[in-house]
Image (tube, rainbow, N blue to C red):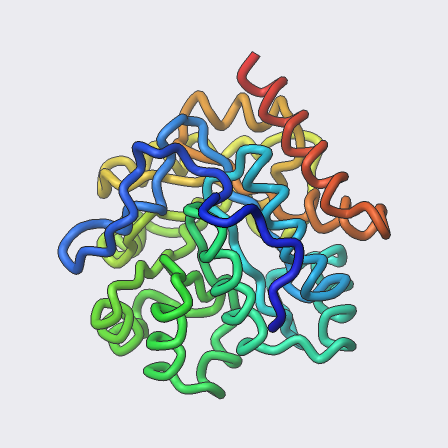
Length: 284
């Protein structure tokens, strides 16, 4: 991929300079941290509306205060995505966006930013590429972690071994319906942070935070000292503030993707405005 709109030579976008960048095999991935809680994780569907614009959106999000970026791999048969992200995947696939393209995008972003980068995907594209080639390519691109939506912790042994070999952090989803025994297993298998799903069902912006989100985080705290990020339905400053009272970070996905969809030609600027609004009001 051709590099476009590069930042000035020697300048990197975003994260605080006191966050170390070293990738050490025996410590948590340092870039998947939230030095100024509540932290912010931003999801984008790569290739929507096109890859150069996705790159601009990601860098704008980091400048606006995103700590971690989830680089969504478009997929034709999503089971956890609501209509907003489904439409984004369809648009990206029309343009032929592939897992290789997403990894290439990650490499470009890493050249300009120290923010955490997580590949967010269903398992099938990874299996088509091959688990070992994928992990090697992700590490070479400067990716920090991977979240596979449909990878269960019970079947993740080979995946976690490959991730460990390449010093990548596997991030697992924890749902409100999970038993304490399963939460313990998820917490033990995760690195970087744990993604707490605030409610059951598919993704999509909600006006109010699900009532069970705080309870889920409290249950997870018994089993891990890792940061916990709350997602699914988070879309506004009040929810960001509320999450900051009991978790380490909030994940905003559908609201970001909807903003991109509604602002053709100025998507990066619109995403920056949304994030600045959420963070400014959320910490007031």
